[in-house]
Amino acid sequence: MKNMMTYKNYLSTIYYSSEDDVFHGKIEGINDLVNFEGRSVEELKTSFYEAVDDYIETCNKIGKQPMKSFNGSFNIRINPLLHRKASQIAIVEGISLNKFVEKAIQDKVKI
Image 1 (cartoon, rainbow, N blue to C red):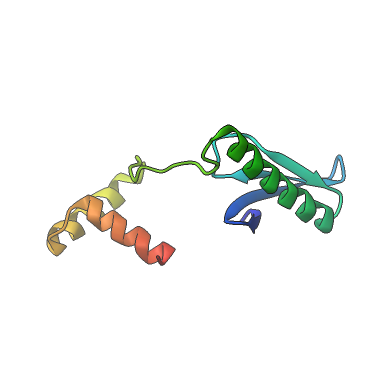
Image 2 (cartoon, rainbow, N blue to C red):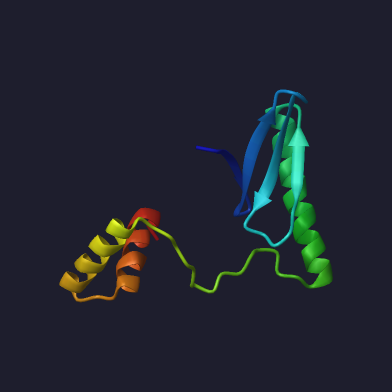
Protein backbone atom coordinates (compact mmCIF):
# COMPACT_ATOMS: atom_id res chain seq x y z
CA MET A 1 0.00 0.00 0.00
CA LYS A 2 1.23 3.47 -0.84
CA ASN A 3 1.58 6.09 1.82
CA MET A 4 -1.06 8.76 1.46
CA MET A 5 -2.38 11.92 3.08
CA THR A 6 -5.67 13.75 2.64
CA TYR A 7 -6.60 17.40 3.13
CA LYS A 8 -9.80 19.18 2.06
CA ASN A 9 -10.81 16.04 0.10
CA TYR A 10 -7.53 16.09 -1.84
CA LEU A 11 -5.48 12.92 -1.83
CA SER A 12 -1.74 12.70 -2.16
CA THR A 13 0.73 9.90 -2.70
CA ILE A 14 3.87 10.05 -0.56
CA TYR A 15 7.33 8.66 -1.23
CA TYR A 16 10.67 8.78 0.55
CA SER A 17 14.00 9.31 -1.15
CA SER A 18 16.83 7.84 0.93
CA GLU A 19 19.28 9.35 -1.55
CA ASP A 20 18.04 12.89 -0.82
CA ASP A 21 16.76 12.15 2.71
CA VAL A 22 13.46 13.83 1.87
CA PHE A 23 9.79 12.93 1.65
CA HIS A 24 8.02 14.02 -1.51
CA GLY A 25 4.46 13.80 -2.65
CA LYS A 26 2.05 14.55 -5.45
CA ILE A 27 -1.56 15.74 -5.31
CA GLU A 28 -3.74 13.12 -7.03
CA GLY A 29 -7.09 13.58 -8.77
CA ILE A 30 -6.31 16.90 -10.44
CA ASN A 31 -5.51 17.83 -14.04
CA ASP A 32 -2.19 19.43 -13.12
CA LEU A 33 1.07 18.28 -11.60
CA VAL A 34 1.51 19.64 -8.08
CA ASN A 35 4.38 18.26 -6.01
CA PHE A 36 5.52 19.04 -2.47
CA GLU A 37 8.26 17.88 -0.12
CA GLY A 38 9.60 17.97 3.40
CA ARG A 39 12.45 16.56 5.48
CA SER A 40 10.13 15.50 8.31
CA VAL A 41 6.54 14.32 8.54
CA GLU A 42 5.52 17.71 9.93
CA GLU A 43 7.30 19.58 7.13
CA LEU A 44 5.68 17.26 4.61
CA LYS A 45 2.19 17.86 6.05
CA THR A 46 2.69 21.60 6.08
CA SER A 47 4.00 21.54 2.52
CA PHE A 48 1.04 19.42 1.38
CA TYR A 49 -1.51 21.70 3.05
CA GLU A 50 0.13 24.77 1.50
CA ALA A 51 0.25 23.10 -1.93
CA VAL A 52 -3.47 22.29 -1.78
CA ASP A 53 -4.42 25.76 -0.55
CA ASP A 54 -2.25 27.44 -3.21
CA TYR A 55 -3.65 25.19 -5.93
CA ILE A 56 -7.26 25.93 -4.95
CA GLU A 57 -6.53 29.66 -4.79
CA THR A 58 -4.84 29.64 -8.21
CA CYS A 59 -7.71 27.69 -9.76
CA ASN A 60 -10.23 30.13 -8.28
CA LYS A 61 -8.28 33.10 -9.68
CA ILE A 62 -8.20 31.70 -13.21
CA GLY A 63 -11.71 30.22 -13.11
CA LYS A 64 -10.60 26.61 -13.36
CA GLN A 65 -12.26 23.63 -11.67
CA PRO A 66 -9.58 22.28 -9.29
CA MET A 67 -10.72 18.65 -9.09
CA LYS A 68 -10.54 16.34 -12.07
CA SER A 69 -14.02 15.79 -13.47
CA PHE A 70 -15.40 12.30 -13.90
CA ASN A 71 -18.13 11.44 -16.37
CA GLY A 72 -19.01 8.03 -14.93
CA SER A 73 -17.51 6.04 -17.79
CA PHE A 74 -14.23 4.15 -17.85
CA ASN A 75 -12.70 1.13 -19.54
CA ILE A 76 -11.24 -1.71 -17.53
CA ARG A 77 -9.12 -4.72 -18.45
CA ILE A 78 -9.65 -7.88 -16.45
CA ASN A 79 -8.85 -11.55 -16.68
CA PRO A 80 -11.08 -13.13 -19.36
CA LEU A 81 -12.24 -15.85 -16.96
CA LEU A 82 -13.29 -13.21 -14.45
CA HIS A 83 -15.08 -11.32 -17.24
CA ARG A 84 -17.01 -14.45 -18.24
CA LYS A 85 -17.94 -15.30 -14.64
CA ALA A 86 -19.13 -11.74 -13.94
CA SER A 87 -21.20 -11.78 -17.13
CA GLN A 88 -22.79 -15.09 -16.15
CA ILE A 89 -23.68 -13.84 -12.67
CA ALA A 90 -25.17 -10.66 -14.18
CA ILE A 91 -27.34 -12.76 -16.49
CA VAL A 92 -28.53 -14.93 -13.60
CA GLU A 93 -29.34 -11.80 -11.57
CA GLY A 94 -31.16 -10.27 -14.53
CA ILE A 95 -28.96 -7.18 -14.70
CA SER A 96 -26.47 -5.79 -17.19
CA LEU A 97 -22.77 -6.42 -16.77
CA ASN A 98 -22.39 -2.66 -16.32
CA LYS A 99 -24.86 -2.67 -13.41
CA PHE A 100 -23.11 -5.72 -11.91
CA VAL A 101 -19.74 -3.93 -11.97
CA GLU A 102 -21.31 -0.75 -10.56
CA LYS A 103 -22.81 -2.73 -7.66
CA ALA A 104 -19.47 -4.47 -7.00
CA ILE A 105 -17.69 -1.12 -6.85
CA GLN A 106 -20.39 0.33 -4.57
CA ASP A 107 -19.92 -2.61 -2.21
CA LYS A 108 -16.16 -1.99 -2.08
CA VAL A 109 -16.31 1.82 -1.91
CA LYS A 110 -19.30 1.87 0.44
CA ILE A 111 -21.12 5.00 -0.77
